[in-house]
Image (cartoon, rainbow, N blue to C red):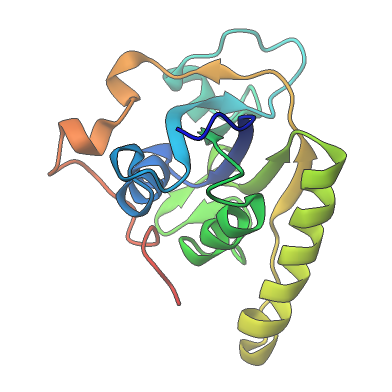
Length: 177
């Protein structure tokens, strides 16, 4: 590791199993590509919805999104690159839905941790909209939200598709360009 300062990126783009899996597939920590650690969990929920669990989040009652929290070294991989990769690996034009997964917990959202991350997310969103979605007449519905409280998902969800290679994976979690 390069002794640089760590940053956190938090993304929601549907079922968190596939999101974590594709980030780790293309940025494996063992290959020193910048991602150091990931966790899946819940964020963006109601203030009074503390310590949510999977079953409760799936009811939609807490307003939490299934998300991945990425610790990365910005001297190796830039936040811009991770935001673009986020857009490449799901359909950001379907509100509260990825494939057959429907509900607010599957919304597309970037939870920014600093004002700089917000500016970068806005710029990359505009660039991706213009380059990839304007030509096909679709509009990005991704929310840009200040990162709030984070709750780790239950242990069995962490790196789920590595532990269960035949487990469910949303077909939208692939490289779209």
